[in-house]
Image (tube, rainbow, N blue to C red; front, side, top):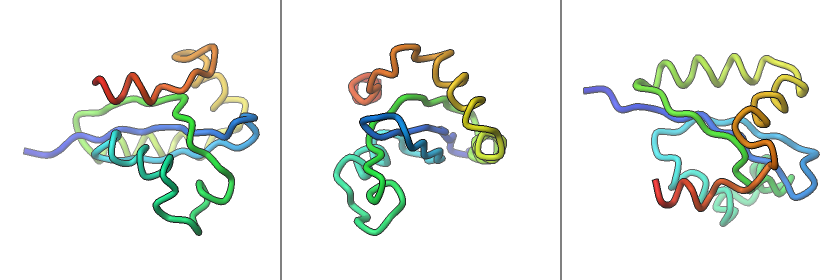
Length: 99
């Protein structure tokens, strides 16, 4: 049975930088961002550790396809996507931890 995947968008404190990623373990991956497990990474460099959007898919292939679509879109489209789920740009980390 194939494992599902989750796409996510994280941002920094001022919401000036957006990072889109895909993972099969959202809780583990966001914790890596928050703990700056990879200090030379894009997300560590730009302090993107605030989870503002996520969506799960039945397959990793579907999640990767959606990640590519989102990454190919404009910043304006990413903001619209975030605000469709999270209009206040709250950190959804606590929600993921309980999920």
